[in-house]
Length: 278
Image (cartoon, rainbow, N blue to C red; front, side, top):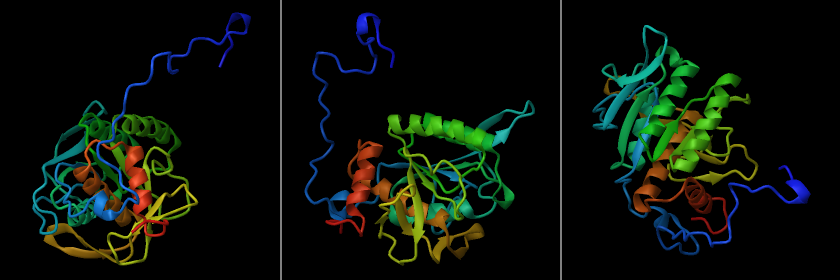
């Protein structure tokens, strides 16, 4: 901040003037304590739109059912990445697994797939950025990212997009890396970062008082949908993350209009290890 002439402070664009701030009513009456029953009750996620940035989702898989859209990031002849309709579906099973978990927790939410990964779970940083940017343009309520990148040049752009999402009320739920390395976007405070715990309860959320990982969800020996209508048992943070995305879909289905900050607060208060949580 630069002082003005005569020691006076320069006029700041982001300072509240003499007029009072506009009212910001709560979308719902917040009880005390906040419980899972209030957070989502018997809600099914109806009304919430969830985007899965991954390897694609198998349409009409028994554990997923119909999805409301399928897109893929493709590279044009000119070397640019664009989002087009996806006719190929899931190429390795990972995205279908995530979708099956979300569907098990929020059966009535809308699921839209954006394929940014290919065979071998590999995807370029440009594809990831293009897919996330497109998802923000579509204004999805929840964006599940069971993936991360270690590339610093990609991280800078992801940081900007994560901030855009936060202020637009698009909730990014991202998995921490399974090994102790620096990767993104889960490290950003504007997203909900997820690691895994070993308990079998799909609704058990554990708050981490020592971030950067904020929450732990079920991620050990999780039964999931896989390719060709099949099933697998998988472990890892990738599969903990859609548990939290499903919870977020149920919260937003029950209390539309909550900001990412408010959703994080609800998640914190219903965590099993937080005093007053249930």
